[in-house]
Image: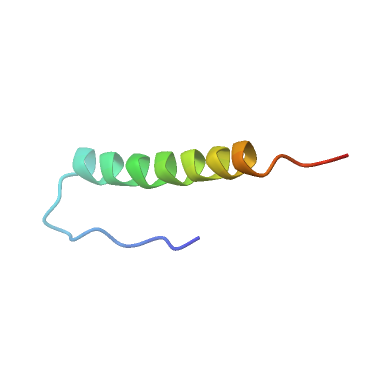
Length: 41
């Protein structure tokens, strides 16, 4: 996973929102893959 440094003009709150959005997208993508290709045991 890439962690991008937000521009320093952003407030700490804005940085947290960006990081949260990146994490949310990653989690949704993983969930999507699990739904599309469920593991067969």
